[in-house]
Length: 66
Image (cartoon, rainbow, N blue to C red; front, side, top):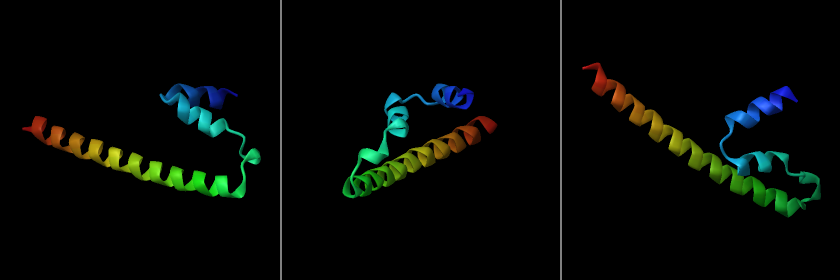
């Protein structure tokens, strides 16, 4: 339980926490496949945002190094 509490504090999005707790047993095969498609798209979107932040951080570090 302590690990779950720690994870809850690190995640800002309640929707993300709800998603991880959803009962998948009640979903059909098609719904599960659709869910995977949506999650993969969200993964791509998240990776793009992370790359943008990493790039911006590198630019800022270079700027303040001078």
